[in-house]
Amino acid sequence: MADTVSRRSFAKIIGAGAAITALPPMVFIANGQTQRGNDLARLHFNENPHGPSPAARKALENVAAVAWQYPGAMRDALVTALAKLHGVSTDHILPGNGSSEILHTAGTTFVTPERGVLVADPTYEALEQYAASAGAPATKVPLNGSWAHDTKAMLATGKQHGIVYICNPNNPTASITPKAAVREAIVKTPPESVVIVDEAYAEYVTSSDYESVVPLVAKHPNLLVLRTFSKIHGLAGLRMGYAIAQPALLARLRARQARNSLNAAAIATSLASLGDQKWLEESLVRNAASRDHAIAELASLGFETIPSHANFFMVNVAREIRPLADAMRAGGVAVGRPFPPLTTHLRVTVGTDAQMEKFLELFRGIVS
Ligand code: PLP
Image 1: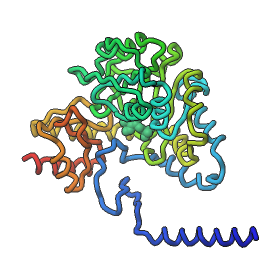
Image 2 (image 1 turned 45 degrees about the vertical axis):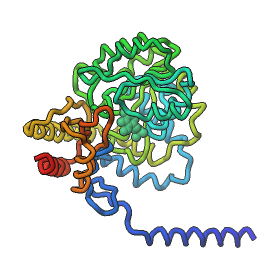
Image 3 (image 1 turned 180 degrees about the horizontal axis):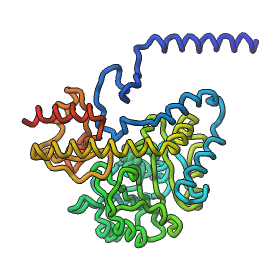
Image 4 (image 1 turned 90 degrees about the vertical axis):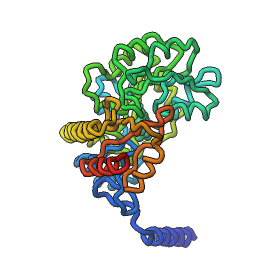
């Protein structure tokens, strides 16, 4: 009987498989595109079109052999590597299914309807959205004239917040908040509030006015630093991010996190990517060259860009960007949506040289 059932369900699976293979090919890998066979330039999600590294690609092939196993041991290996990278012990690292999973867990754990989130305006909106789902409000403080978090004004809100969120570099502006201001914000925030410093784009920054706050975790039990493999590592599609914080703070998140939320492919590729330093450096150089070239071209057309410290930039096009973005999409280039209140600034992810040429050509045609 059991045999019959399993044979029948097996036949069902094969049938489903046949139906799936009959679908038009959805994914093609060349040039990092994932559209249905077209060549849309994806300059809208701050992905890295150069990744993943050759070592990560190899790891992805090899991982098939262990796909049947729960990934506990692999997870431990990644945690060990990350702890070594950041000079902390392994109990200071909590990986997640993208840093989004950590933001979601934190955004629903450390807030109440009375103690919401304190954020810059504009900034990466996910935390605010997750907190809202827990009934917690957001207090928004505009970026200052240098496009940095106005940490003085944030500290002066006078309210108790569940979370103070500092996105550095900031998305969508690609600007940085100077290290002294971030330090002061961490030191002066009351210990009952959790300070989240989101360093998703930290690897791209070369400014001496910037620092990662990972070393401050040792002194501040309420500090949570976020990193991701979605940006410089070029692994956005596989989902891996992590938090660095003191063990007691991480324990509060771990208690709420789904078990086995990580997957073997993401772990294997992330580990391999960490070991491919040369590729990461090349990625950095390529990004800076394409970005600076595009920004210089835009300047020659009279358009000013917010100084960028990441793999994207915001250019002031001095008009509502929606029609411009729609026209670019029709021409095969996807750019960022409007990010209120900056509705005349266009956010553009740095793509390959060919994609940036296509962007510039379209842009010139539309604005001339
Ligand atoms: N934090 C910031 C500032 C981001 O820009 C993004 C993605 O764009 C994320 C977090 C989410 O990254 P992940 O892919 O690790 O979930």
